[in-house]
Length: 271
Image (cartoon, rainbow, N blue to C red):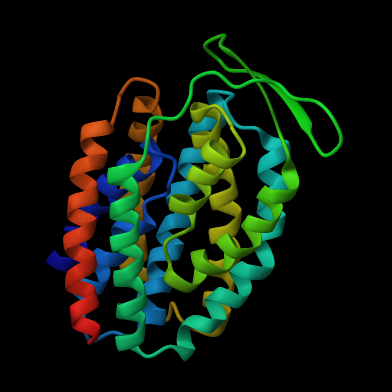
């Protein structure tokens, strides 16, 4: 019982930080679950993490919708492309031994740590471009800030197919991949990208979680999902509130170091 209760503050921290940077929080939660439950099959832990990611993304998306910062048309387009991958990823997890899963996840965490340490601040100015294959967007948020940008949807659609698979397979939601794609490749304004990524994440993680539930991967885990879910839904509201008020460069660097250490430890556990 005590173990279940302390999952509440863990969920709150994951929800707040994951929503703050638009990456969901599964990339934080999954390594913790791997370290806490070393004997459990990866499909059970990935299913727990993905279900919690859905609750986090749902709560964050509602907050971002109130702030009117979601590019809904783009989010639904990219989310639709993630669906086939999300189903396949959820089914593939059960076919991978725990040791192999640890090796793959450890490499991913170290890669994410390197990315966070080396990433540059996103540009604040986004030039509008027109022509074949380009779409333009104009979005005014609740605070009156108008965001104008243009992008080519095809690269985002193709990458979303892979994001859906990785999301469900590893139980991380995919936001840690999709958010940089929106900002760096498609040139979304960072605050719009954060909000839009969250709606994509909500759809992807819902599909993956439904697949896991039908496959029985969540059997016996609903109490942990509920405790973590309550925490992340509350934390997501705080993360959305802070998203335009906090410059998280130093937080990201500290996170990168933590992810690096966790990745190395999980990787060694798989050897």
